[in-house]
Amino acid sequence: MSNQTTQPNQTIQNLFINGEWVVGEGATLTSTNPATNDIVWQANSASERDVEKAFQAAHDAFQAWALTPLAHRIAVMEKYKALLEANKEQLAKDIMNDMGKPWRSLGLIIFQGICRTDTLSPR
Image 1: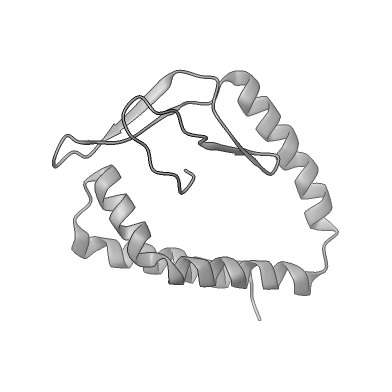
Image 2 (image 1 turned 135 degrees about the horizontal axis):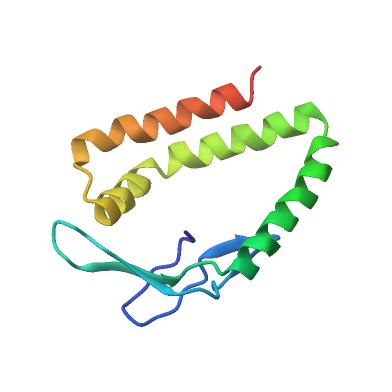
């Protein structure tokens, strides 16, 4: 999900395909906060065509990524980890609103996600 906020009936660009945020061509999805029944977001799902474009873009990107020097790949993962750490509070709030997950359990979920980046970028 992009970092855009939405109001009911506002279409958001929710798919990241080939380096761009795009609006899905599939059916409209609505996420409601299970604790309040407030609408958290609405977005179009991916169509079969969207999935095919995303798959092809990922395949093409992997070819280039595989040729990227290890030191650069590690730097990218370290930047990703830093972004997770810097935004962990907002990530926890977004997950809580979207899924109704209790606040006290979210710290562990975010921490686990941050720790998993270490296994992807060993030093």
